[in-house]
Structures are given as structure tokens and as C-alpha cells.
Length: 195
Image (cartoon, rainbow, N blue to C red; front, top):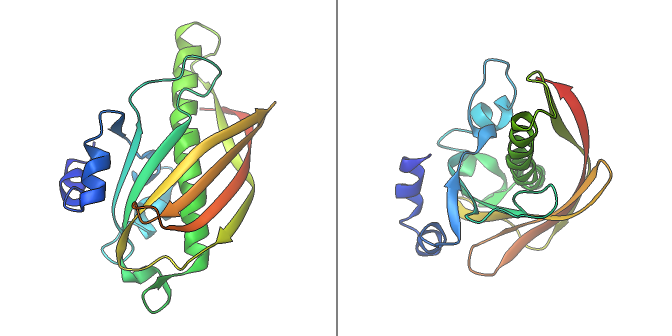
């Protein structure tokens, strides 16, 4: 579950406080794992170097939601960024910052889809070769301050609402101590897929 990332990121005080919180628990960041299908290769491989995203750790709430189909309403992903992401000296490229927003929203959706699919499979409402997936329809990004590099940032994604197969999520990138660098809102379309 990223023991090396936990040990490394715990050296930063605000990260340690979040990691040690009894309300949050580390969880798998599925998009950070290389796959034979090449799915997620941009985040898992291209951005998984010592000069790009050096460390990545996702935390989800310990308590699952009991109402609605979103098991987890929020995730927090800590990323240690290198200088290979720069657009200007010591500043992350704006396109990469938007990528971080999209990615953390995807992490939230993936955790929920996996939980939802597992529940549907367990109660016999879904065949073993069926599933759900989400695709980005839009991502609105508001840049408040430059994201410094190298450095450690906190990316959050929070479920906003659902309208049939449209899922709305709000997200931020901050320094973990209250300074917000970027805010985003996205809409995702949920579709049935073959596994």
C-alpha cells in the first residue's frame, strides 16, 4: 500500500498529520500501477520518475458512506513533485496542474466504481464481464497561485452531485497548510463497459 511513500512523505509534518489521522486510511492509487493494457501509462510510467511525480499516496475516509451510490465522497492524494514538470523555473506547467486535477478526480471515481461493481457482483446484479467506467466530459480550472516545484502538494477531490449518468466533482491543489494553488470542477459521464 505504498509503505515507502508513507515513510518518505511522513517526513513532511502536515503529511504526517494527515497520514496519522484516524479518519483517513491509505488506499491503492490504481492509476499509478503500470498495466499490460497500457491503460494509465501516462500517470504510472511517464509521470512516475524522480523528476516528475516522485511519490504519490492516496488517502480515503475510513468510514464508508451508507447512503447513495458513492461509497467515498472524498479522497486526498499527496504528490511529491520534481522539477521535470516545470513550465517556468520552480513552477509546475499549467497543463500538468490540470492533469493533477483530472487525475485525483479519476482516483475518487475509480475507488467508487470498484466498490460499486464489487457490490453489484456480490448480489448478482452484474455479470462477471460487466462494469462501469467514467470519462471526463469537461474540466474547468482556476489557477490561483503557481504550484511550486520541487515540492509536496495535497490534491483533494470531493463528490458534488450526480444527475443520472453525469457525476460532478470539485477539486483543489494546495500546500497542505491552507494555501490553495488551483481549483477545479469537472463533469464525468458514467458508461457501462465490458471488463
